[in-house]
Length: 252
Ligand SMILES: Cc1cc2nc3c(=O)[nH]c(=O)nc-3n(C[C@H](O)[C@H](O)[C@H](O)COP(=O)(O)O)c2cc1C
Image 1 (tube, helix red, strand yellow):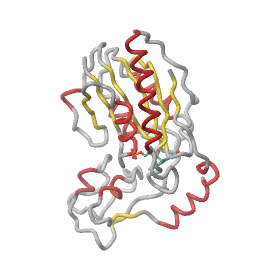
Image 2 (cartoon, protein in one colour; image 1 turned 180 degrees about the vertical axis):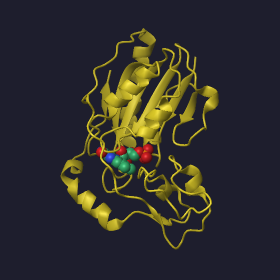
Image 3 (cartoon, protein in one colour; image 1 turned 120 degrees about the horizontal axis):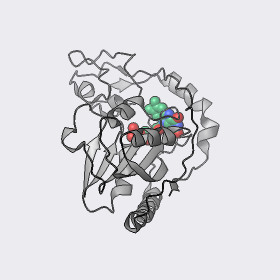
């Protein structure tokens, strides 16, 4: 029997949430969906295994690339917990999309969580979350899930969201390398969609970029930035929706 976290976390917020949930498990393997071709040895599950699938919400939906990579995994009836992580605006259809994708892979969903993490573009929203109180709450959710696992109850909870899913919008925020760029190539290596040319890391393919902000967050010299005026305008547009303190939720 194995416990595995399957995570897509470009800037680390989703990973923090996932770690807070998985902390009570005895030993946990990790499948990182953020980088292509990294996880081949543990792609096949058995019915006794437990998987935690964690993804951020981008525009109220799960990132397409994460769903595609999840689709390569064979669930084989393993128990599964979903975690949709969002930046305090809304997660809309993220959980139902994850539900459909996980079931298509053969997982059995026994619980789901929505959790807040600092907004990876507009850092003023949910700044510092998940914080200590969130981690305590997420650990409490994990306890409830562990009890359900021990009881053998495999009932799937009802999850919020709509089918058909909302239409995906595009985020016109492609990070650019500034003069500080040393062309070290780390961003190209770590880009989830391989949108950055490894031979010339100053060049980004705007069609491939999903604005996930990984390159901005990992650049060792802070050379990569998005257009500050556009970020300010976007932040203003969602200010009302993001201002109240939202709570993590457990569906069990
Ligand atoms: C392109 C993009 C779109 C996002 N859309 C939403 C959204 O619709 N609602 C929301 O609350 N947060 C949104 N966020 C914030 C992320 O869901 C949140 O910061 C998440 O923790 C990022 O995960 P990561 O830190 O693992 O990369 C968005 C972030 C990005 C980069």
